[in-house]
Length: 264
Image 1: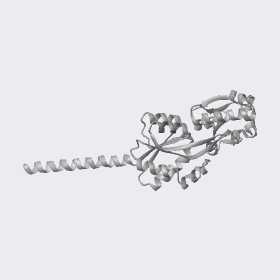
Image 2 (image 1 turned 45 degrees about the horizontal axis):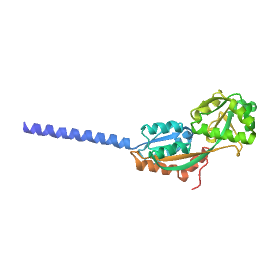
Image 3 (image 1 turned 135 degrees about the vertical axis):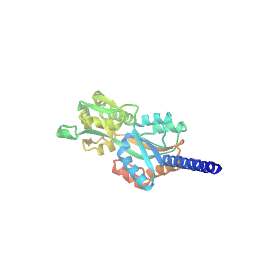
């Protein structure tokens, strides 16, 4: 009888050990997932960076959440699990840094604005920025998102360069303001707008739109910032991704996707 009780205790201990090992495996698996919050305009470039980083780090899953930078910032401020934040402007990154939520902020890429028109419209589409006042349905970003705030600055510059009547006429053509650059571009792709203002990288990654250059004295350059969340549970892995995004290989990926990268 004592022997049976002994075996029973042994089996129980083995069961506990197996359960602990399973929990340990689950914990290890969770530790191999890196949560990256990235501005929606980075979607194509970061999809390639995600694949490359995972290929170089066996067992690592890079889970990227794309949205407007302001949305991602609010989610982080409210406790969303993030290890890396890649923002389309300095304002939202600075707010998180001031709140002691982000460390290691750096500019890793830049992009200019671009006027886009439907490729299907052919010669009927606008062919120069100076014709923008002739648009019937112009779509831009809302003012509190990066692409929208950059557009506001660009229109103000256009008013100084081309005259206030031009700026007023363009503003009167705005029929919709959207929450991120991808949604703005989609309005043109779907035929719901005949012109829109997005990032140059967004224009380059779509076959359904045609880019129309914005004069350099009017255009605005957007700076993309990246930082590691201080509360990241995977600080070493997050730092590795941060360093990778700033590497020569990643800079070449960003260039191919229409971004300008700073010299190191």
